[in-house]
Image 1 (cartoon, one colour):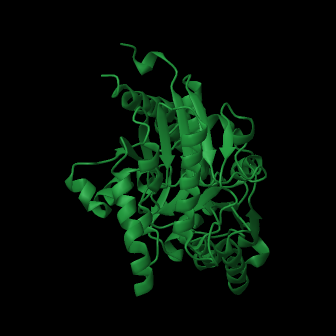
Image 2 (cartoon, rainbow, N blue to C red):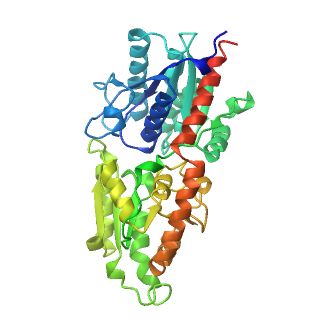
Image 3 (cartoon, rainbow, N blue to C red):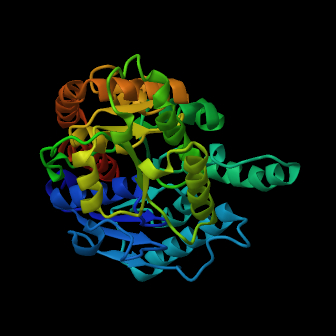
Length: 408
């Protein structure tokens, strides 16, 4: 009997919104790597802005097809989850009705479509869970708790219907078990597939500038205000760690994904600018919204260190990108970064306070050679553990194993 390890698989990937975040980076890498292993890959999504996307989605080895972009993303800035469900269900229905059968459908983030795409019995379903959605939603009122209850139930039930569940870190795997207790009781446990970074895209660092760089979407959960507060607190170490250093030369750049369609992005950017003003550092803080890959790489090449401020982040692709670009990372000592950053070797893992972040920053200012040493070790670490080549090999093996189950 023919095994899928010796033939090309037809693989569909269903993703809700193909923007420029970490989840989208993983999906693009998955599509590129699966294509490089000889599979026929097609990405389906509810939104793809050609002016705000990863370059591979425009000229990569796989096509991108959009269905359902006319459907609302929210209703008066509410019901985001329900709207996301409806948009992804529409995408799934279009895939079912308008395309031939796929061997594998990789569903990303929104599990509600899994029962639909399982209608075709010959198709195997892989679900990538970046983090349980039920933990990302607020429940500040009884009405919101009532609204979320059926959504949370549907999420757990449909997630358990996948043939293979993948998560992005051991931290997320443990959170998965604590959150989806019914699945854990049935012995349904996810496999860990770390996201990766293309190391080859990063050139040798140019001359180091005393610039700290934060790369994150402009969302409150990313805790970017910690970077501003820590930067402003550097003066506390003047005369101690920073003996003889001119802080006027030190700058901070806040770059990342920004979508003017999203109310939170607009509001949070304004809040951050206001914070920089209140802290008296606005003249040394630069904001860069929705920079291109080339602009991001240039910023990485010139900075002395990258600040990664989210607390309990389920993975975090930015630390990998920073380390691949030979830059040390200062991050919170929780969540995924604990699994990717080697403390005092490729960066610092700190308590999520301005004082602790600022102290780590001060060490890099006082000893730029330490930043260079850590940066070189960081790149070696990423090459050995988190390269797209390794990611592609692992994903291909998992996909082939799942496809082979129907042939045994």
